[in-house]
Image 1 (tube, rainbow, N blue to C red):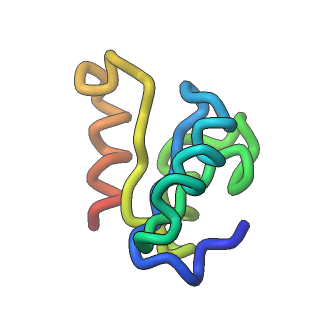
Image 2 (image 1 turned 135 degrees about the horizontal axis):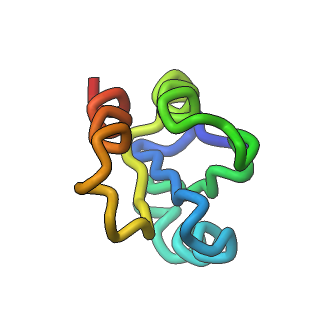
Image 3 (image 1 turned 180 degrees about the horizontal axis):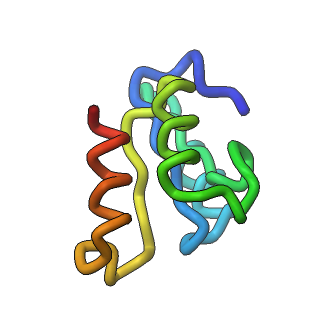
Length: 85
């Protein structure tokens, strides 16, 4: 995982294609963005709060999720708070 050079580090969650991270980095990488798929950071079985903490500790800024019901899941709302803390 190479996240130290970008000004804005964005992870894509397991609900999105890993190829999307590659494409977005190619398009916006020169602008200071780096997109990383969570599969390159943690195992898919990693609990939400643990991967969120791992991503934050790696200097990550945001996570883009393909989970359309995330707002209705209390543990996912807590994970979002963990990332932004």
